[in-house]
Image (cartoon, rainbow, N blue to C red):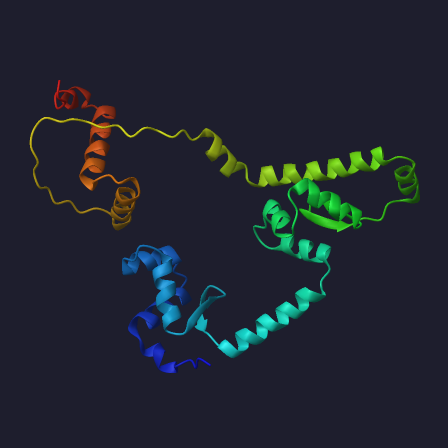
Length: 246
């Protein structure tokens, strides 16, 4: 069993980050302070020191307590019925109904909705979750008279779930549908190369490096392309034109 070493609090980086978190610094501000690429680097550093992230800070990791917590959670989950598990999953913050459907063994939101309805639950658009449904005797009688009525009601409930999902993810859908994949321009310029040292924001530098690696494009070409488009759009169109090979 791993034992937490209290002497780790004497580590300068550990002490500084914990103090910054206590004062309300965000993860991005701490990443920028240390010049890391992202928060994962900070998180991995603390994990190696025996910490885990909890309640917006790092806390000592107790392996034995974590094992007990997982065992208790597993025993509770075993006792839950499948509809109860689905409802609990949808209660979580930023829950995705499509993801919950798939993880619960259903091929679609509609199939999940039909299953929940058969188990006595219907979709509540205000709660964005399923609630127990007790039909009035008249409704139950109508349901027995013909399956069409029940089918229509179930379909409406499923549509409600789908519409709620679409509204919830409207910004992402708009970005996906409205963004066009642009072809990167290439420019053949007259003249040779020269060295120029510039000081830029460290986050811009990180984006430059990432884009260069991801798109197999040199940093020089990225910067030149960006400057050419800037000059063309902001008053130097004629001057830029004279740089091109004709």
